[in-house]
Amino acid sequence: MGQTATLLKRVQAISYADVSSDHTCRSQTSPQPSEHHHSRSPNNRRRGPRHDNGGRDAGGYREQNRGRGQEVNQDRDLRHNIPPKDARDRIHKRATERAVHENLRRIEYDATHGPPGLRQFSSHLRQVVWPQNFKLEKLKKYDGKENLENWITLYEIAVRSAAGDEHVMANYFPVVLDQAGHQWLLGLPEDSFDSWEELRQAFMDNFIATYEQPENKYDLERIRDRKNEPLRDYIRRFSDMRLKIPKISHDEAISAFIKGLRFHEALRNKLLHKRPMTMAELLAMDKNYADADDAEKLIRDDARGPDQLPR
Image: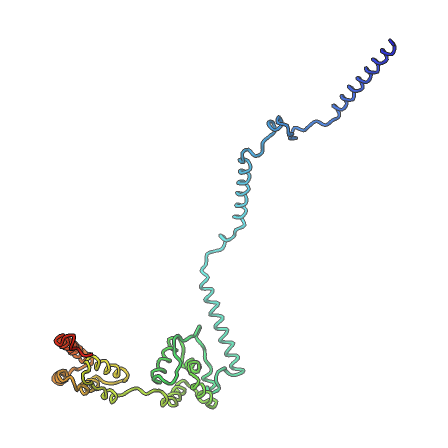
């Protein structure tokens, strides 16, 4: 028994020595944590460096990079190296060059194929240089009802105001005609006109009898006042007719007005005694008598009373 106990003690001592030796070797061979290694332990978090610094370090880094970017963009921006220059002169010059080139191209084409346009116009009349942005504003087409001479005069003024010449007048003339005008013009033989004057005269000769003729002085003399008609109504009818008569003299109009007075003898005698020289004087005298006539009518109506007024 004594030997057995001694043997057990030796075995236990050997086992304890082996365990101690193995623990010592493991401690020496295991890698030590680096001082930059961040442990999750509370102590390491307190001792480790803080990179956020409340956002100050990151914000400073971003501001620094942003400043560098701006410096790079400023270095790459070459707009300040472009000398200041007004481009309108260059644009106008190029537009003029294009217009000249287009005109030369048209001249070359016309020399080879003949100028475009209606064959009723001569080759000379069809050689037209159109103004830039040529357009007639608010010009009514001729429909055969207006005064022909007045309409053609307005057409010539419109073309002149748009920088057009007589060749432009002739070549643009078909655009402002209605169907009857087109039929007349296209039905003519080739080379019928060599100038705008020839075209203008031929058009007036053909359509002079189709439009509504203006009134004349004899139509004005047929305007008479009526029985019980207020003087102001007669003046209005007479003035409307007079405006439809072109080139009537003041003396002819005054004579026709006096001749038409049949039921206003006081005014007629006044005008015969002191004849006005112009229509303005006549209308001023007529207005005074018309006001007096209206006032006299009101007085008569008041004297009759409401029960005796004409119904």
